[in-house]
Length: 520
Image (cartoon, rainbow, N blue to C red; front, side, top):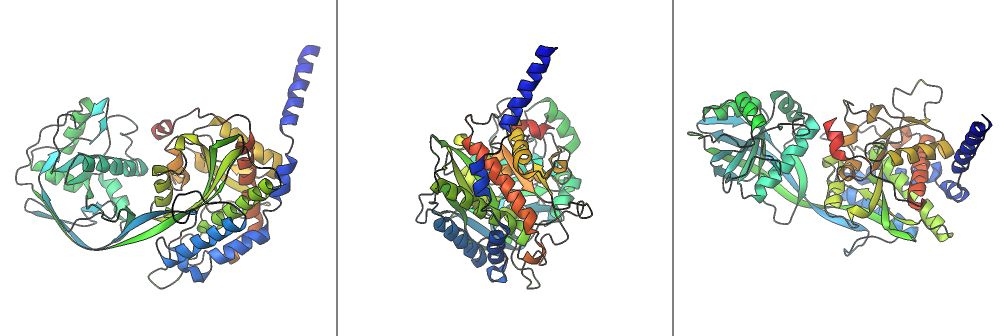
């Protein structure tokens, strides 16, 4: 019994030692203040910036402001571009007056029967259909083996024979049609059409706008991806004497799609589209580490918002995501001051504010597809999006500001989750609320901010979030409604977590895979 008690004492003593605060970390955390956050946010959410619409003047004004802050604190840029603080990408903006599609002698209506993905819409397209099953090209299940799609229009059914492809959910299908469309474009097809379940089609079509934006090149291809309602899909399949449900049953048994002869089912598309190419920037400040400098921690927030509405009102986006952007600037300065005082982190840190989040996580997707630093060297991403307000669920509680929603911390790395919890227990003592981290979260917040582009590359993430509110995506999301005390506390929690990640001896382990999360 005495030996057991001694063991317990030693264990408790060890845990207490591990939980001792780092005085240097605490010293520079104090530089993250309400006053500084207020100053940054007051500029970023001012009417002068016209709502920071991606690709517009206000977004670029915000980019230059953030760059100036990184320069002021002595952080260099990270890119090889003319301006090393900017990673620039091109955006294709499309204004659709009309898209008309006919199959055989039947005409179909935009948004009622079909809609397009992205901004690539050709002026004209004609071609023959080829049925490609689910359109999957995996080693153990390949619908395209022996199938020629060159110069044809590929017709696929959404989903797959097994999870995760068989998961007919909004976000899984969105990933499917993008990836499969890219594969058919690479195979020389003229276009790609995917049949969605009517319930999913109706949900998506409500959000389809005649104006869209996507990452592009100077000479964008016009490879179209069209999403069809189940009703339209069945119409087309009937011309080949096939039925959707029967085809699904066959594809679940075999990857070889049925050879369907589409009689009198030639596809014709005509459109009236205005096109414009804009540019947008991710803004980066870089702090090189010491003995582990090849390993990288990435801190992100999006600094774009939704601009001016059709009534001429400015959506300033103070909370979304001026709050996260201001926090990144303050955290960067705390680390820069620590480095100047002799406390340079062991691992390197990239402070990156991204644009295009409101257009489909475009800026962070561009970074992970064109990384400045190798993704395999990226240890973790800490992402901040909307930390300045109080969720109605907390408003009537006694300490209503002392919480933050934590999303994703345990999805890929158990160790990252423990570090996040430890930083909070040691320094900030907030309520860490995991309700939106649930696999069955109907809001699907895990997939809706920039951290997800890191997570899908198996990079551990933590997403810090305070919840939505009545001013979300409205002109009333202004600075005077921000709780700067809670914003400061969340920013310090992110800072302490980053400090631990950057300075610990071992790199955190990835003991789960993103694909596992998709199957849940």
